[in-house]
Length: 262
Length: 332
Image (tube, rainbow over the protein chains, first blue to last red):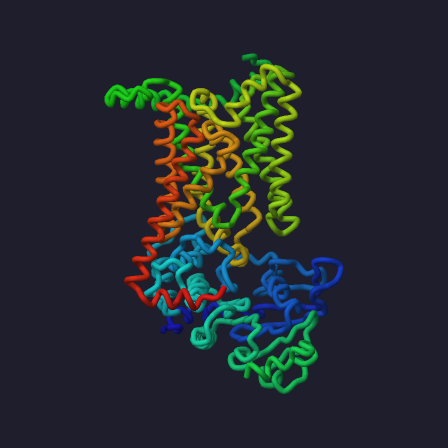
């Protein structure tokens, strides 16, 4: 696999950006009068590998939506690449990988057609040029999905599908990769290979923001952990997170999850 | 037909815009007549058939095209809801003509009312963060209730003419309504052609599309407005009650046998055209309602596609034994 191939341009672009990738200051947000998250101040710099953990309903996905500018904070400021997050419009810089796509499972769409979408922020209303297609093929190669390029996404295993989504992010030449519980429903062997791919992309200069329920994966791969339960219980290096009692405080009785999964 | 208040509309810029369409209709009519002469098909010798066939061909392209984007987001019902509000629009047109003596085509008022309803559905869904079947059902029944009420207030002669809108009618496709449909066709194809990338991304993965900088609510609004145009256009020969089938059935059939999204677009159009052309011919010779026959043929073709799709996937599974284990490993 050749993660290095796509990373040079990204490193250059990341280096040219002095601002942090994501910055939240004193952010509060709620869908009703009760805040889902409050008093959140987080800064993520280029090249970091950050995991957000927290129990169900702790506001992880809301935090992600705030960071990506999909919702606006009720209070405080959210910036993305130095711009107000909700106004940020260079979508090509962000790759997003969810548990699964929102389309119906019967949608006939090939892996290549999915990866092609990564070029849409670049081509707008136009057609993909041969250079665009070359980037699509390069992205497929990087994630090891070239052999599956013409297969329907519905025929893939969970792990393969997530690789296809990563390839879409690579095709858009994103310097920030945001993954929302990407390994739900993926078999254990594929999960290992998936995280190795993430590690190599991060070494290549891509900032990785991982929202994850699998604490063993987090402690093994992420450099920094943000532990959330409506507010930030812990934000720091993974090693310190494991030693701290933040987990017990944030998760309550569920804290022994870490012990079990390690 | 009385001109009255509508005269400026009909001789103004609208007529200028529609002039090429009327010219095209003439050309098309001559062409089909010539084919009728050459082949000896009786149905090709009538002017109303020339228009009906053209309208059918246009529906066969634009209905599955829009339907593809709806079906894969599980929004198949929206076509039905908009067709019923289109019926309210027809009633509004008939009502205005009867009361105020306007000479406006009911299809024009139908397009306007259906597009307003489409925006309304979309704004509700934006406010509630989901398309829900309850609000869709409310819009559908409100549209139909409004239509029947308006028509019953007029009663008498008006009610007689309603059947063509409810069930569609090949023989009543006038020059004007064919021109309206052609205009809708040009708009729908033009907009889908321009925004196909964005529509595909929003259809496949709404959140990822939003993250990539696409304004999801903007494209959703475009999508529902186009749907309104298609259902009102197709209403002429499909009728209010069956029009949604053209958005759904060919698309469902194409998903069974296609390997890619682009292929599924093409296959759904081919299936729809097959149903439309065969349906018009059969309904002419069997003296049956075209809309009904077209849908029955489309469903038959869909059933065949299901069988072919099952056979295909069995063949694939046989030639790639490892695919079975991959699918078994999939959890969600």
